[in-house]
Image: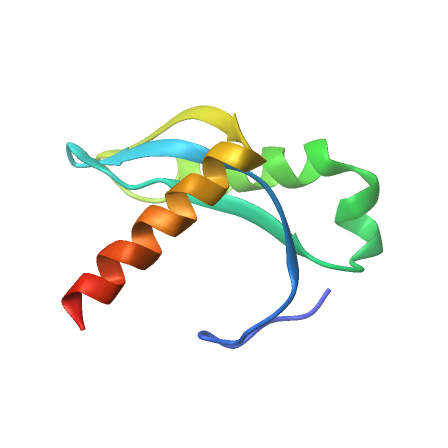
Length: 88
């Protein structure tokens, strides 16, 4: 595995998202892996479990909810993109 710098663009495969709450506010987390990553593309459950495990200990007041499919995650991404465009 390798690290990716913040704000790096990469082709990814979106698996879905965890519907999360951070101190009472929605804070959904999209789960994806880099296209061509052999490890996660072969066992998606490992990736989802590792992300859920990490998020569960993320910080006090952070609640990990249900996992939604890729289509729902793409909706989350598009809504965030549009919200960002409204702020610039």
